Length: 401
Image (cartoon, rainbow, N blue to C red; front, side, top):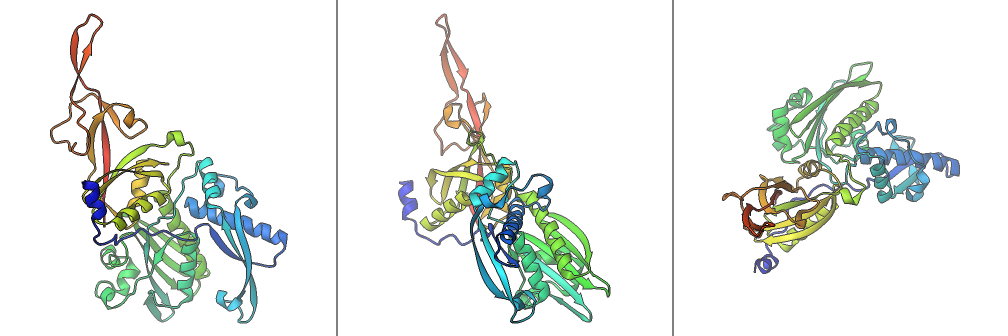
């Protein structure tokens, strides 16, 4: 009856979704020509860019030896581009090489090297950048066309970070001013960013002092604040440094060490609330399946507006929770502990063995009653009543935002 009620329920579809970053395994670069020597060097450079993007670690080559690119290239093609699009002379043609690398092979390589993987679902970052350039001062916004903004977009795209520029319209300006952004005041920045994303906030100031570009950059992520002071002869180099520092910090938080051995993969139970339509159910199932920390998703139980999944994980549960909380699809609820019989049904799960009697306040309505006692016949025929062996299992609970 519950299943029928669920599948018959066709209310509003899922409204919030995590940000799946496209093109993580693709690279475009300018090359001198189409010769084999030039292409081989470019393919190796592109593979390094992808490995850094997927690992979230710009110092990756200090930990591993880069493999030859030939085994990882899925497809490549050449094209011509007007040099003006890259800041060059209008009418001059540049040779461009586009490459797509094999996602499965790249991630398998990182797993074999015990390198954490940062999957395609990534926290959106709102960028507040205040600029002083000569007599001008301004906060860059979504609609601006600016070489500085283009450099920021390119640098964060290279690292696979989905960046959001604020509109900086009247609604924003009622909350935040140029001075707030320049000084990096957290309270107005957090308040103004809520309309854009529940993810990370990047704040920066950038100015020319007559001899060099200097800036203060900060990342507010999961309640933690990181700051950097950077300078350089040109703003592009400062921005690239900032993007690498910020992406590395995010990678340390969200990249997860994944098990290459299926036998080591742990199973956990997850409850998702506010599932009010078939569309929402399908969307959340697809979402969970797409997370890099998840090996497989199996529907376990359905209740009105609530579903339970058993997930086989490639990594630790804490890494999965960090990954989910970096997006905007699910909100965390308090975990719930249930008591189950200690049998093979909980093998290779996160259940903790114990010899206990289930407490009255433990919610066991969605599981079979394990009982509290077991009759054991000894060698001399005596019947002895003993407490049943049970396990306690955590149900990790979330709800649709």
